[in-house]
Image 1 (cartoon, rainbow, N blue to C red):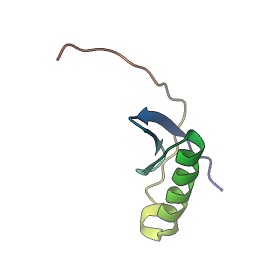
Image 2: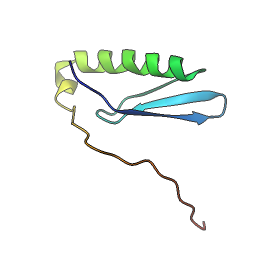
Image 3: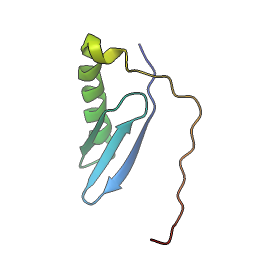
Image 4: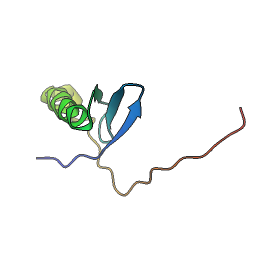
Length: 70
């Protein structure tokens, strides 16, 4: 069993869920649906022996926001 870290953010009408340990993301119309879909996608992703080696541990992380003039 692996402990995974993820983040969820709103994009329009959907919630996007992104795993920080592997390059997998999903979405749903609710936070719970987005998380359930992400768990399923990560499980399928890690079933492949070639992609399982791409798992990396994530320690502490910070989520922030800043503005730039563009």
